[in-house]
Image (cartoon, rainbow, N blue to C red; front, side, top):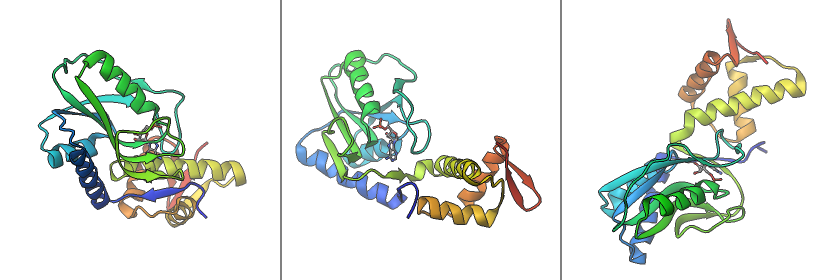
Length: 225
Ligand code: AMP
């Protein structure tokens, strides 16, 4: 049993889900004239929706809540507030997933108040219906049990944070500080139930060494609390 429920999402799945989402939007009769990507998770789906729906106008807004993989910050904020005039536009606000929904609700309220589109609808690839505070206008997949979706655009960031958490917690539980590469990979697979491949493990370890979380001694990685 994995310690954290994680599902690895492939690029192919992202394309398939975005195409399916576009289909639902088209079927509803809504014809957005501008897409607003919620940074950072909404960038790839928003760009694909532009393609699949034939929308040329794409802007973005950064609303942030989760600062670390599978760990929530206290509250969502609009990172770079700025003014736009979207009067006359039918807008589509796009993100990867509605989990708590805080990020999107904040972005929606900001856009309606400050950018004033004639109409605004919300589209996401996934909606965690058991925890979300609202239901988006469009979603492709309804998720009933909470899982961390390891999207392809956060693979390195997530891998790094997952390894960091694993070595920190193992140290707290057992006092272990020395790890071989092989041990890290094996434990990672056990803890998270996914395998991201050697390139990601190596890059994540290099970043953790740069950050001073791990030290290299010969063949070993040493956790430095
Ligand atoms: P939230 O405000 O809780 O709806 O989540 C804000 C953002 O955090 C989402 O747009 C995702 O980029 C990321 N996120 C939250 N929950 C998950 C999850 N279960 N899996 C992957 N990414 C997530």
